[in-house]
Image (cartoon, rainbow over all chains, first blue to last red; front, side, top):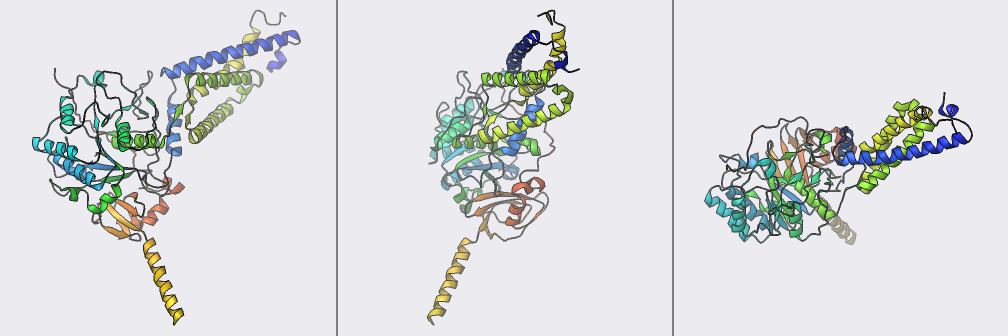
Length: 412
Length: 115
């Protein structure tokens, strides 16, 4: 028996319909506020599909450069750079001094050093690096740690870092230092998401660095800087450009012996390719500083931190943004979907075809989410919307049954 | 006589244009292949990169940076043909694959100072 067959006729039917609409509106308001609140509190039980959809959006629809960018380059220290040295960490600072000199001679627009200087090494080598940084004509930006993670790591000592930077002529609270943190959001119902999705929010702790490494680097380079916003989503680049080249060129430095000269580190012929670029120096090792990012869903690749900084820098230069809906926008959309689903469940009996409806709804939601991401850079929260639809259809479907059991049913 | 000189001049001009337009590739790094770092090669050079090998190149003009991982045998243009558009998803060594399972290392390092 359909709901229309069972509904009372005449004035009472009108009253029940109005009542049903009021109930639908109340339900939609409740669903909109509660699901959005749960989402914001990290309490959505089934977040995995949302992250899955989000990550695939990045893997498939992130910006693809036409060819390698002409404003950024990575120069990386790897196993093949350090094979001749008796230890890898800290990276030999005489080697780094030669690298800095080579990049300075190459005419880079700015050099960013994404390495941590937390302890002394050979004093002679430390001094060589200090001299190389101090005497460089190219502005050099240092990646740095601060105290924001002390709650997790225990008390940390950054005395050496401060002294080293100051000796190199770089003020720790100046424009040429940026923190090297990324950000993972903790969900309250599952394990910490290991995927880097966000730039780190600004820290308000005294002594913490205000700017990220990428912000400091772009600002120092003189290129336009378009802020992303605190804790904003990183808008990734496809690793390969449309012509098959690397979107951000990567140069790994091999060495033949322990004391390579700047010319051996970077032959003159290769320096030309780094001229007028922001060059970020970092490490690429199999066991350190490797991170999952949303596009990793396609290939499982863990990218080095230096590549993430380069992506953030590219985003800051381009002014690309990925925007979440605001809290109230999400409440409205979730409530609207809940309302429509309730009415559809109540009057059109769509629960009869629930598999079709849910699968079709999920596909439609995914397609709309992909289009919004691709065309507008908007991240649609698919989990709250999907569950609003599911709850709306189910409760709308049984609302007739509930209404018939209300004391005033048919009394008008 | 004049027409012969004109044809000769045109040939020289065409050859010059062809030579100028011809792309070069510059070796940035090579692992598993004997290629000198910083050397320049004609862009029709056949690269024979074994499994585990890795060659980094700059294509000139433009300095587009390529990372080709082995096994691969062919020219840079062969790589580009194979690794652009939808074919990249189904070809190995194109930068869109190659992650897969990993073996995290359980070693540690830290900054914590004893109190």
